Length: 128
Ligand SMILES: [Zn+2]
Ligand SMILES: [Zn+2]
Image (cartoon, rainbow, N blue to C red):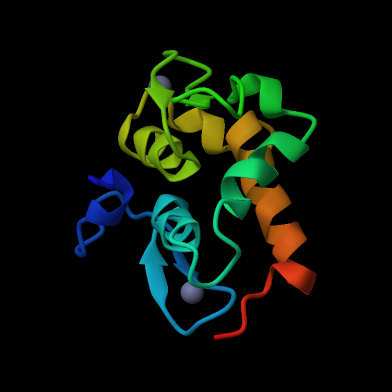
């Protein structure tokens, strides 16, 4: 399966923030790449990133239905995506949509939600 979020340019031409995985010592360019890594299911429970996205009050701004083939969409241009990481990669790489990453916008709010959620990893931590 093709994962566009895994294809970030290592030179980071967009100047995206670097995220260290909360559970293992790896670094990722852009929040999309961290999400891609987490969606992989090695560090958090499989499918947890996807289902968590529907637990925020803002989900109507980026989520269709969890059961859809493409549960996620871009609020500005309405492009559809199968995974949260694909949506983040889209906004990171699309200047006209990137404002959605601002803290006051829906994807900024979702990013903060993940960050706060995983500060207390609890039962989502997968022991290897
Ligand atoms: Zn990890
Ligand atoms: Zn868009």
